Length: 115
Length: 113
Image 1 (spheres, rainbow over the protein chains, first blue to last red):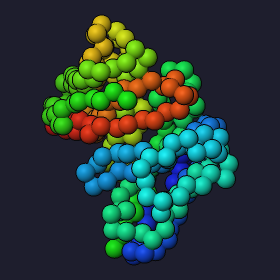
Image 2 (image 1 turned 90 degrees about the vertical axis):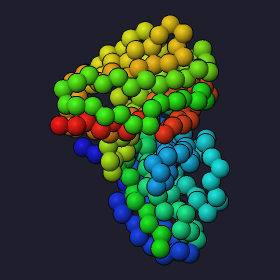
Image 3 (image 1 turned 120 degrees about the vertical axis):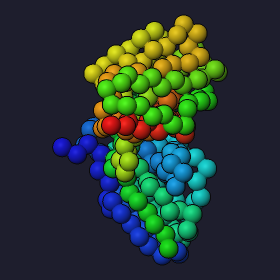
Image 4 (image 1 turned 60 degrees about the vertical axis):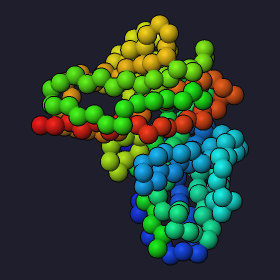
């Protein structure tokens, strides 16, 4: 039973292209996130959606646009890809401020390589 | 969110108990301490969370002194499969109902046969 799934797992593309990464969770969670982990393994939050509403938007270039068609899905679209976008992108989900938990469930990651 | 400081790396032999300490001097009253584990090529996985004293589950124990300015993740009798990066996070899970989790650099634990 896959809790948080992402597609594709690997993505190799050229600079200037537009690409999308899809995320789905079957945990019934209301909140979903996108994280970026760079080559130095720093894991940084990019976006967070709660019930399809954007609640966290870190300093991310507007080439990155999240889309949440429903609370089980959060997709990430990236326009005009640049070399610096190469990283592993993780999707995660959690219950909203449930009172005592930072427990997030992460997907397997999508390794994006821009050439 | 409170800033955390952890050792960059640690080595341990199989079967030993491993203690990873995290410093969080400016922890706020409502902040909880949470630890995640990340294996290579996988997403982070929640291990344990606590507010004060001691918390234990099937994976680890978390020790938090009275001043809460630090915490220690204890892994009993580690095996090679415990080789991973361990992240300490501090924050208020009730802050606006939203969970803006900030991961630090983590501690890379290498278990040696």
